[in-house]
Image (cartoon, rainbow over all chains, first blue to last red; front, side):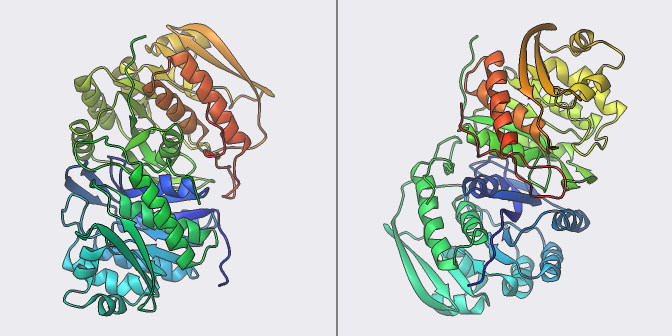
Length: 259
Length: 259
C-alpha cells in the first residue's frame, strides 16, 4: 500500500476532564508513538469516572476555522475522529474531509459512555452512517455500538452495512472470559485477536485503541498491522491501569513498551 | 515542606489545535512525568504556528460543573493555570480554588502569544493580579509579561508587586545570547539558571515549563528543585524541537530523558 508517512495526526474529539478518555487519551497515545497530535475539540463535557453530566458542542464555524488554519500550516495524512456532537457537526466535518482528500480516517463511533450513558441520537447515527463512514478507512465499534449502528443484523451483515473498508469489532463489552476482537476487510473476517478479559471497568480504552491505530497508520503501517499493534499497546495500558477516580480505571498510557 | 504527593494535576488552559502550546503541551508534559493530567479548557482557539485568529471562552457554569465533578471524584493537590479568557472567568476560577483550599497553584501568565499577538486585556491583567496571584504558589512570567503585569518597575519591584511567594522570571524573550532565568522567593532573588539562547522561535515553551513545574510539585518536589528540573526538561524539549508548521517550532516533549 502506498502510504506516505506523517509526523502528526489531526484529532477531532471530545474533552473529558477526568483525563481518562477523549482528547487527553488521544494526545497521550499519539504522543507515545512519537507523533504530534493536532487536537480539535468537538464537544466539551462535564464528566468523571462515574458519570457524564453535560455536553457543549463546538460551533461549526470555529471548528472549520481551526481545521483550515492547521491544514494551511502543518502536514497531516491521518485524522482520528472520536465523540461527535450533532448531525450538523458531522456534515461540517465530512465536508472538511472531502475537500482535503487523501486522508486516512480512523473513526471510533462513540455512542455510549464507559459509564453506560447514551452519548448519541438517531440523527447522529444516521448522519455518521450517511456522511462520514464512506469517507473512513477504519471503524472501531464495540459490540453495543455495532448493534446500535446496524440493529437486528448478524455481525457480518452489520459490518457490511457500514460501508467502510476496515472494521475492527472490539468485544471487551461482551460477558465472555476470553475476548475475541475481530477485524473485517471489505466485510470479510480476516483476523481474530484473543485476549483475556480484565477484571476492571476502564474509561478511555476505545479512545486509546483508535488513537494508537491512527498513529501507526500515519507512521506508515498497514491497517491490519496497525490494529494488531494498537490492540497490544491498549491491553498493556489496561493491565497497568490506575485507579484515580471512584469508579472506572484510567488506562496507563505511558506504562507500555512501544512495539 | 509538608507536601503530600498526588498522581494528577488539574489543568485550566486553552486549546491550541497546532498541538504545540496550550492543553496539548500541558497533557504531554504532565504525562511525561508519570502523572495524569485532568484537563479543563478555558478557551478554544483557532491558531497555527504563525498566528492566533479566534478565541472562544468557555462558559463559567460549564467550567464550574467540570471542576466540581472532578473534585468529587479524583484527588489532586496541584493546579496548573494557563491562558485565561475573561475577568469573569478569572473570578469564577479563583472562587473554585478558594473553596477547595490547600492547592498548589502554578500560573503561567500568558498575555502575549508566541507569534506576538496580544491575548489579554487590562481587565484580565487586573483580575489576575487582584484575584488569582494571591492564591498562587508559583508564577512564571517572561520579561514582556512581567513588564505588562507591573509596568515601569525594575524587576525586583515588579516581582514584589505580584504578591506571590515564588516567581520564576524567564528571559528567553531577551535579545541576549546567554539566557538567565531568575527565581525569586518572597521577592528575593535566590537562584539564576543560565542557558545558551537557542536559534529558533518556539510555540509552547512556557506551557511546557509551567506544566513540568506543576507535575514536579504535585510529585512532592520543593519549588526551587521543581523549577530547576523543569527548566532542564524544557531546554531538552527545545533542543529537540520539531519543525512541523511553517513558522514556530514544536517542543519535542517525548525526546528528553526525564530527570
